Length: 211
Image 1 (cartoon, one colour):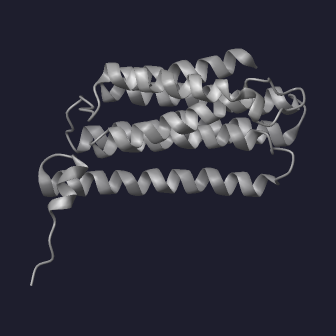
Image 2 (cartoon, one colour; image 1 turned 30 degrees about the horizontal axis):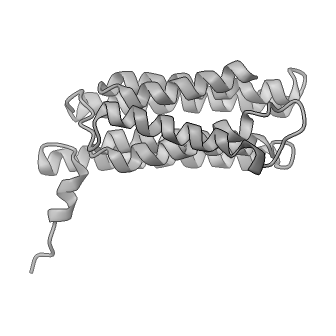
Image 3 (cartoon, one colour; image 1 turned 135 degrees about the vertical axis):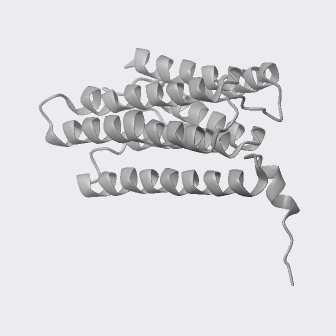
């Protein structure tokens, strides 16, 4: 399981350090594909619940949502550069600081019984905080959607610790909510781009009521 957590963390750092949006979307898709395997490790191949989570997560997080994001880039003719508020080098340093802080608090965090790795909770906390960092340090709407997806992947990791407690319908509802959320964000990106000729969300602050 540790190699999955390491892969998820490395993909989050890749997103922090790269400016090309298409590469960021592929990294989020890769992160989703890695996360889809986790239920199998937790509950085994013979468990229908784990197989359902594996299939649903793989299709929605690694295929459908990245396809929607690529379509938004293509139809809104968005420039490929992320244009962060914080430089990419500082973003990587910030991500490193977040990970060090999360893993330093290992003893203060709850300890999970096998099959969960001791790194599970610190890795989940790191991904949630890196997702928040991406949300506030990027100006383009599509970069913020990518930050939101990284944040959601961290929450998904936390949710894995409770996978035995929830029925499949709850998890299906959460995955569909995420899909609908990204779909709505894609529509917003299209309208922001059509109104301002770019997708910098800072321009929304200039909007005023008209008589």
